[in-house]
Length: 352
Picture 1 (cartoon, rainbow, N blue to C red):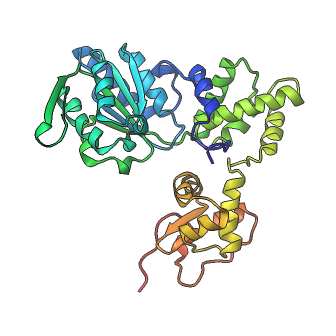
Picture 2 (picture 1 turned 180 degrees about the vertical axis):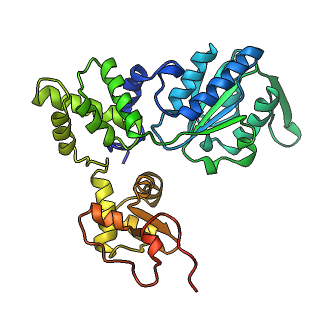
Picture 3 (picture 1 turned 30 degrees about the vertical axis):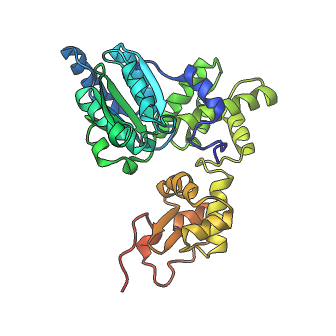
């Protein structure tokens, strides 16, 4: 799953390449206009007052630029950024060490912040509000309270699971922004910008072919661009034209909507094995040999965004558009299922 070309989850190779492609200033960041304008105003106001920026929470699907925005905030504010992730902070002492090393105004970026342990979350409350740390060490009669002051800082948290953050932690963020999938025009700009940095010649049609298969996700666009570059180098003269991009992406089995073999296998299972559904998540997972959580968190969101799949209380069903994409005649609504189920993603009305 993690090695899918169209997955927003970073591959090992992405981590190195993305550093060179990552914009450094807000003006160079393509898309997310509402988020950018709100951040611009907040940063300008904070600098005018000589104060750290309010704590910022960024959420949305992987690969949309949450980490990039954290670095841009640090660059625009003229401060340093320390980077960690929820799973990497295992003990309260680890977080205390990070916080005490921060200089006034610095940014602490915590990716996958929803995976912070409960004890670590609790020491973050006072750090975010009062710039102080307070926690208990030892047990029983040996227990003692430790307190430390930390420099005023800005916590930038990123998560793909906004609902999994505890309410007390969410409430301590002064600004909360959702990052949405990018439109095709923004994706074309991102492809062209990355091509210029990679010193790769990409014509307008080539950029369009890559952009429309990138699922509205910059990380996917940059990954596909690198794979198409390899194809153009070996099978052509190195230039990425529309025809060259089309051949390369067809070879990678990425269709015109950005769906790959896994997406088609999931849709095919619902349509063929379960007559269009409804089918339970666990049953569907067993039928395609995938984890239920992986289907729910990774595969389904984009299929639902396209209107190919619908979640209902009785299970997953394929919509009319899903049937059409698979080239299968739509049989019409099943008995006991309301027609609107097959048209969109809303759950059905309760049936008596």
